[in-house]
Image (cartoon, rainbow over all chains, first blue to last red; front, side):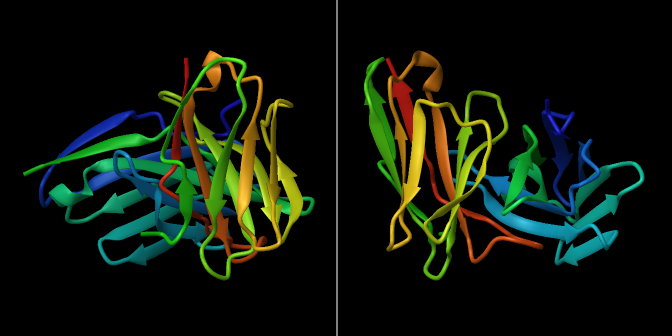
Length: 114
Length: 114
């Protein structure tokens, strides 16, 4: 059962434009959400996060929006740069007993066209 | 560089064999997570250790086991290997476990079972 879904396997955007990556989740117990970026042959790199008590978090060109009622989060990259081309994973976590359970989406491959 | 190291980088073995994957967390991090990423799949959580103790279990097969040692490095043991175990195995670490926990990933070990 996929509790975190990224329904767009790929996205292409022109350099300088906005990239919007989407993520949906099903478990209302999730209280912390993260975005990771992954280049080929490397591990995922932490990008930005948001807790369930907020609806927006910004870090430079990256902004994450959380809509709890819709169980939806999105990552906005403005302006997009060719170096942003990578696979982006969203993740959600919930405290379970003594530890955190993390659930990852299947990723969206972003290509920024120069 | 996340500060998390994993060895070996690549591993090729045969069905029925046993292998050990090693992970060293970032300096100061007490929590270690193991994930499996199969082709076109998201990261599947396997198991979490915190300061030497098992804290959470995900979809880990009985043929797989892990432990975290007093120096906080962790090993994932995979036995009676099957073709379907071929995947990327990632280790991630974090300072603690709890609210707003962020994980930092190693570069992964690519396992190929022939």
